[in-house]
Amino acid sequence: MSGCGINQPEDLSQQREKKPSWIKVKLPSDPTFWSTKSLVTDLKLVTVCEEAQCPNRWECWSHGTATFMIAGEKCTRACGFCAIKTAKPDPLEADEPQRVAEATRRMKLSHVVITAVARDDLRDGGAGHFQQTIRALRELNPNTIIEVLVPDFNDRDWALALVMEARPHIFNHNLETVERLTPLVRSRAQYQRSLTVLKKAKAMVHGKVATKSGLMLGLGEQAHEILQAMDDLRAHDVTVLTLGQYLRPSPKHLPVSEYIEPAVFDELKAIALAKGFRHVASGPLVRSSYHAANFRPELDVLEAIEADLRVSST
Image (cartoon, rainbow, N blue to C red):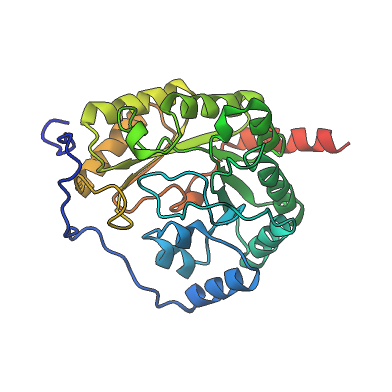
């Protein structure tokens, strides 16, 4: 990987203001975009697509897909990379799980992604709300693959167990960045704790779930640190990886240290696959849920989940 352009100086204040040519966003032209937006508005749902200023929201909504963000749009943490507002959250909405399930039904989604803000104000961190949403989704959409992208619940095992008892097919929790930069990038989060959460989640269901994580690049990480993060994820039984370019949401957020060239993302994808990841999405505009439906858990995992659910319902 010599000469790949990943090694960066420590000074994050040196930001390239002009985005390179490969950072392009397509504006909506498909009527499906507007029907998706109308549906989300009609059901009073929040999407991470809009709240996090995802660069792919035009594309995804034009294809009739969205990542639903439950538990409100106000986060209790203030991560240096994130566009979601930090404020005292509103109370949970009891009917939100049913509204998400109904949106999934109307959109005919074969794969749905559910995420949430960090809710450190709640004793369970919002885990029970995840559980209710997963169950509502499965009841109304029994053939839909359910992926959750969760906060760390402050590493409370009993809270994590609430999510896993509802048996999502894919459990996603992002490292976001390399270990050295974690204190700067992720408010109140811990690198090792995130790894532990990923491994615990899989162990709680005896391996019958696909685990997934992601990294943003361009924050000042070095090549060897990216490779170490890959090794750490594999050591914690993670098999799905996303790698994307960090884009600064506003002047108040952390600056971009470097725009990584597409060829480097391709190289990193090849390395990750060689390290044993089953599926890797790697590119400048890749985000955690970008083309999420391109990955489907192994058939034996899906069958095992369904078998466990049948037993628990009897």
